[in-house]
Each structure stands twice: as C-alpha cells, then as structure tokens.
Image 1: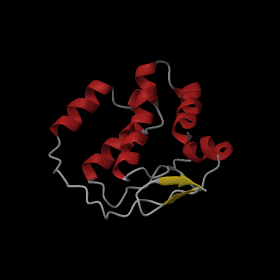
Image 2: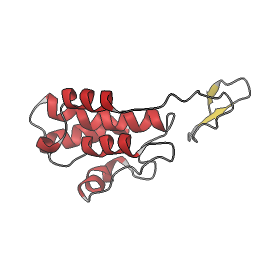
Image 3: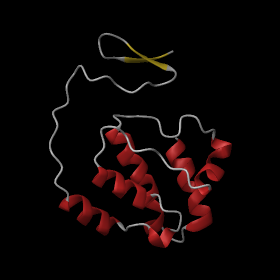
Image 4: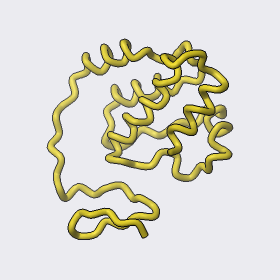
Length: 127
C-alpha cells in the first residue's frame, strides 16, 4: 500500500512516462523480497511520506541484503527520474550479479507485521 502511494506521489512530481516511474516500485519490491515481506517505512505516515522522501530518506539496507542488490535498490529510488535505471538496464544488471542460492529454512523468523499474528500451523490471522 505504501509503495503504490509513494510512486503515485513521486510520479506526479518527477516522472514523465511509465518507464521512469516503475523503477521506484521495483526497488521497493526488491526490498520487500529481501526482507521476506517487511513493511517499508513503518514509522512514516502516508501524509508525511512525500516530504520524508524529498528530504533524502530511503529504506535502510536489510541485514540479509548484498551490497550489490542494495545498490540496485538505491538507483531505483533516485529522486530525478532521468537518473533511474530502465528495466532493460535493471535486467542486465541483475542478470550479471553472482547471487548465491540460499535455501529457505522453515524455522526462519519472519519480520513483524502489525495487526497480524502467526499461529503455530504457519497460518497468518488478522488480529
């Protein structure tokens, strides 16, 4: 939800076409994947998000994220649309990275989610 709102706000101000708009959301999705579904900007309310981003704030590098992947994320979040990578560039860049395969362990601790509870069976229920 936050990702889409951020993109719409930034698109209105800086982007002139879909190809310069999408990398912002793609960078957020990469961050969400690396954090196993972490919630971006959990302490920033929607009405403050635009100013927060214009002030230069970005998502921090997740502990489980390589420097190379985080560099791709931050390129996607550049303020000026013309400085963001195209999807062709992103595909080339990600395709050239040597990313080791990591087996997902069932006992891996999931990031906290406000408003939801993970019960023993692995089912997520709303509180």
